[in-house]
Length: 411
Image 1 (tube, helix red, strand yellow):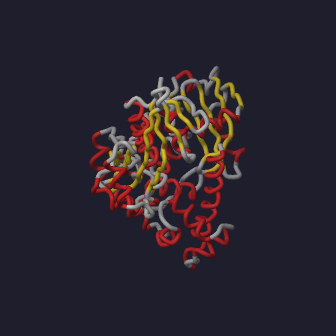
Image 2 (cartoon, one colour):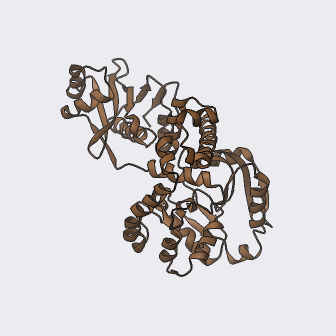
Image 3 (cartoon, rainbow, N blue to C red):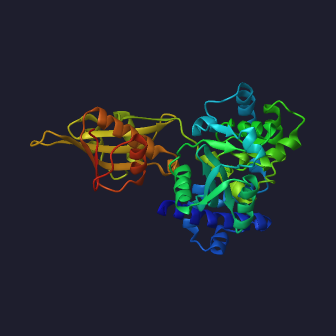
């Protein structure tokens, strides 16, 4: 919960910064001025801004005239031309989230949710506060809040006017944490006309990180002359973020028309464009990796690195690569008990190139090493330092809970 609170706090500051940049870009304010205005130190501001938006504040300032969005449309066009024509892409959001989109029954539509029990609540996300609601069929509402909680709740009530509503902020917080931090998969229960549902399905089929225009979506659903109807359907999407209506903009590059705030739309687009799953792999380190390892571990000696690569009695070095470039490293030592004959491992170091932080490299390394240790018959793995990502990976893989700093690997 602390992690999502920290991300929520950072989001509020970044939103404030973007509002200031939007209002003052003609003055080209310095980073010092922007940081001072939002109450952060200059270097902390730059780091947090880049983590969320994917570019530095200065780069964002230069692109605030919509050139950034226009360039993304050009880049997206070739992907859309090849992928939207053939249906579900292997890199679509639908594939990523394993989302099953379920439409309400005609009876549920007519009766506005009568006899349907909906649990709802308010909680924090990395992109602001949100209202989330769900039934036994799936999530039926997700809306972001900006000092307009009453208005968002009214929209939700109007959508499910006759449903039995149960308020539970605790469960809502767990759902939001599962979605935004743990990438847990949920079904989506939507309420709309056939056109609206088809538009929402088209949004789910957008390849990851791709920005589309309203015309692109109209073409995809075979209604090229229904751009206004498509825009209206996108505006009525009641499951924000999971159905990515934030990734549709005008041909001009304008980002108008997002029901949960233009600043949030800009942050979501920029964040997603730089936080896509990487085509990376993990393997044992080789002699030719030493130069790259020295960059990750500037204080390590060449002889010691070579020893860890060649002498299995010490343990193992694993590297994560992206496009054949070493971007992360994990060091693991092996031990066997003379008394019990049990084999254990110690996770001694995990280092990722700062350019690739928050892009899943840590989880990729940890998942590979955990499964390798399990396959090799290790009974335990012990941490020398806290690695938060490891707890999420363990939960995903179904391993037992940690005992102190030790994780049981045996069944």
